[in-house]
Each structure stands twice: as structure tokens, then as C-alpha cells.
Length: 243
Image (cartoon, rainbow, N blue to C red):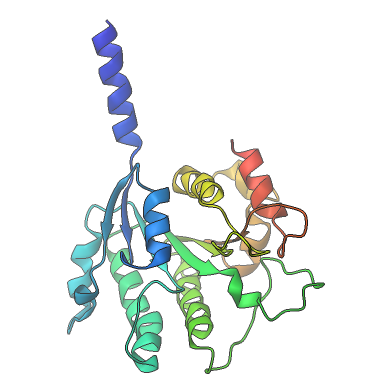
């Protein structure tokens, strides 16, 4: 009896694990994501796999994958600006197209709250804000461009995109984000069914998603503390509501 219960418990845990593909493996953010998702089956895209002559070759990367994690900000290093822009536009499109062909149902788009770092601190920045970036700020320009590519796939209802603009992992920053809070959020984002009628009719999380597109769900994530840089009411309510 005890052995049967133990086996059932193990099988249940194994069945709950997701097959997750992450777009990079060597950057700081990819390592943080790896730590947060280490209870799942993780695969990574090798940079050499992005040197393709036929986009259809990308399809195999997504075989048997449940969730794709696409890093929009500081995920990969490039030798020049053209290569960086090309990755965050054309190659991001090709990767997402391949994900759609392999019937991926959910994409986590990993972006940054640095997109709003030049905004005056007394202004209230919410998930509805949109920004334009000059070409001389290449990393933020690319993060913004990559977000827009992800958003188009969500609008076309190819798959669901949960766009996460993350705070800084610098403990001294007023936009700091702990790995603990990130892990809490990611665990819920992997499993929660955002398409249930109950959630669709609620104010959270679809209140802003409806304005952006039916499958585009946007969150700002940083730690909550006195003097924090960005509002976290939406993500904190989400964590509380779906414990």
C-alpha cells in the first residue's frame, strides 16, 4: 500500500513537469531562469542553431516542447548591432513561427522594466505603457522590437504570450527582483489556464490583455517594498489570487 502511494505520488509529480525550451543558456538571465525552472525538463537553443539557411530547420527545436521561454533582453551576445537587431526581429519571428507550427500553446516573453528607466520616478508606470526607443540604445530597442514580434503572434492567436517585464537582479536597485518572487510567478504562469471563463470575466489578468489582443498578457514584476520603483499591484494580486 505504502509503495503504491509513493509511486503514484512520484508519477503525479513527473506528469506535472513541463518540457521547456529556453532561447539562450549562457547569459545571466538565462541562468536565473534555469534556477527558477529547474524542477522541469529544460532544453536550450544553441547559438549555432540560429545559423540556418532554411527557417523550417527550426521546427525540430520545438518538438515535444510544452512552453517556450524567449528572452528579449540580454539573452544573447552579438558582435555587431545589425546582428543583434536581426536576431530580435527576423530570427525571433522565425523561432515563433516554428513554435506555432509545432503547436506550442504558451510562450513566456522575458523582457525588462529597464524599458521605463528614463521615465520620471514620480510618474505611474503600468502594464499599458508603450515606449519608443532611439537606435543608439540598442539593447532596449531590441527588447522593445522583440516584444512587438511576440505580440503579433499573440494577436494572431497562434499561441498565448505572457510578457514579463522583469526588474533588476541587483539587490541595491529600487526595481530589484528576487529569484524567489520570480520563481513564484513562473510556476503559476506555467500551469494556470488563462482561458477559463471565470478568469476571462475577472479583472485579473485579462483587464489589460483585452486591449492588447486576446492572447497577450502583460506583467511588471519586481519585489514589493517601501520606495519600490514600479507598481506591482497587478502581479501581487495575481500571486495572492492563485495560491
